[in-house]
Length: 550
Image (tube, rainbow, N blue to C red; front, side, top):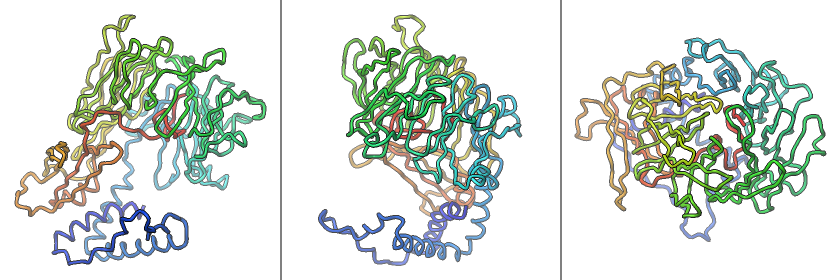
């Protein structure tokens, strides 16, 4: 916890010190040569575990800590920050697990976490009646490992049987074990795969489709699997039947079993990552044949609804056949049987699709519009031809907030969303996607007094004319004469926009003491789907930290 608290204090103390006294003149450090042929004077830091690198890190940490800890404000700030980061009244974010809700909970007692479940009715209570599935700390101690929970792939619709991914130390290589969530135990003699970069999907209760290290020539240069096999319960891995083999130059091959709301298999897709950002999808038919799908290579597969793939298009898709033309950033529904595609939403020039979730009959779309959040629910056309277009409604969630899709149930139209803003603590909302109804389930207690501040959004014009949005959180009575100490933060990489999230450490340590805070939110002028991490079903990541229905 100490490094986290130090990170929270560093910028605030530094900003306060800069405000309190004039900056002493300093000689800037020599910059590396711009000559590409010149050796990098810091190249030795690439070996992050070497004694020289670690000695340098430890020395810099000690120098920073000494500077911070001698500041007369340090101990007060440390206590206040520690109270925030160790508060026990945090919201347990849920995920759907059959008819129950699952959560991975970590605290001072359970550092690695407890994977646990509760009924939806109990979850609504202030103190839910949780039932432990796996205690990661106890399991680690019993087996002499450092087990980190990397997610679970569960068999719909009951989600009783799950393939639990456990990483020894938190790396990409995970061991996979079959777990019974009703018996609350690993299945004796069940499916088990030794640690590796691997991907598994339930085809049925007794059959898996598995991409892993099968021996020489089955891994890419990046260490990801290239070969997918069919593994039956009780048979040795040596007897597994190969169904697909990627090219040696590929990054990875993976499989996705897409299901209807009742849990029946609707479609089996094989993904071939030609590069980290290019994916070819192939349709695996019931007779074992494989048919390439005519899709753009830069595409995100978000889910499956009514026989159609819900796709985020990340490059222009020119007219081909009946689907017309689509632009990068569009969300479309694609029928693999006919090749027809329908537009669900085309973001405006100020909008970005932040996330997409699919329920039994709806598509939930989280939008950023000039970095302010909104969530729209889309319903497929009611007529068979699809000529009526996708209808939609906006959920009645707090305006001017950061909104996050936390979970969605493909077996129903239920979902959970969180809202937060600079001055409003995080709240969890239950959503009925079919009716559009929302209800607040939980909210964090306020971590600081924000009543004396106001939030404003402005736009700065860059040298090329781009309008860059930024937020100003300032005292209501602030004088515009440069006398208010201000912390400014900005980030602009990978098409990721900073949103107006609740930062209690900033509020308690900075705003309450009369400071102002500026967040340069990034540019959303070019529409597109924000890159997602492990929760997306395409790309190199094999599991998400939350449970995932296959």
